[in-house]
Length: 550
Image 1 (cartoon, rainbow, N blue to C red):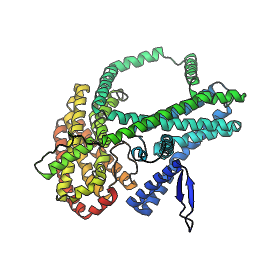
Image 2: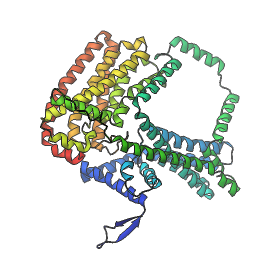
Image 3: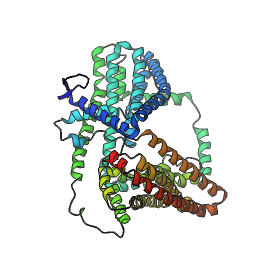
Image 4: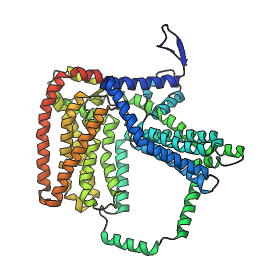
């Protein structure tokens, strides 16, 4: 137990609180203080009002619809198909939401490595981690969705409220545990970047063999559609058989067993039906806790510098040394390592789910390189973020601000140039002959986007800096102005440069490569002008960087 002093009393009054509550209070107070420091009290309050307003107008229709669906299913629980539908919905939201959150970067929220130094048990830290994870936007959306669906069921069958609460709690635990497991496994995989690249390259090859070329053959598609019309004629018997198969598959789900307990008149049997879902939730939570604890130990060991890593190196000018330092910082972070998986993911998406979309050969190359540029936005708009407290040492070096910005930009340029080269290589290997001619123009499109976003990012990195963790993929706490600036600039570059690429490819294919080269050259001159302007701004705002990052 922890002892706190309540601030509202005129004299010290000790208050005993649990470790989990103490961790949550510390976590949310730290986040609020960061928001106040970055945006001021009025900006933080405005952000909360905007988030509540957007959440109300966006989530209210969804929650109302799910509540009505839950009520309708609750009124028909006596029918055989209704419990299967309830179980399938809870399973889809729990497992699907956890997988989506983990893939999108849902790693741990608390700093487990630092918390291991306190007299805290593993499960106490994990309980606080689960509660803090609900505050994530995606987790919050699925939590509200499941709560609304469960509320509709509760109104329909109020006599089984305790079983509904157990089902809801178990589903939430599955959601958060799966999200942490997927995020933790992604972090563990990124520790072995070469292995991850080879595995994903194998998946690309398998996908290319399975899905065929980028552009589907229209003659083959026409024959397939004609055969489908002749063979798969709509028939009630087939539809009924499909429904029965889906119902049989949903019947074995743990959530379906819990749903069957809602209409079982035998309370003992209804209680026993809750055990599979509770056991699944407990197993996933135990696995997630063990994985996060193991990752925190490995994070502590990774801070030890070996003799080989401490070699002294030389450089021709200060900017070259800063560029190499930035390269080492990027490759030592989870965000930097994950960036080299983005080209592979782009090719997997194009070769897999999007392989049958119409006109793929027209948009595959520009779409892939614009997607790669979007993945760099978090770094480009916050180039000092990974430096954290080390920014003090950078600013104390006897280096001109322009040289400092040029060195960091050079490091980022080399890093993203290798990303573009990797994507170009993968597109050349797996894209087919139709796309090979567009790859050089796609590289120039990527360069134009990166230079334009980097020009704005030089200013935003000084005006709105925030620390980025090197040990995890998700870095929450981005202020609302930064979110709007990043989204607006990225979408503007994609629309403008992608539109020019599409027009040239359509109207003047021979001018595609020269046109994109002129566009990239123009963005290079713009970046050089932005570098001079931002250098003067950095000279006046050194204290801001130290205050926000140090």
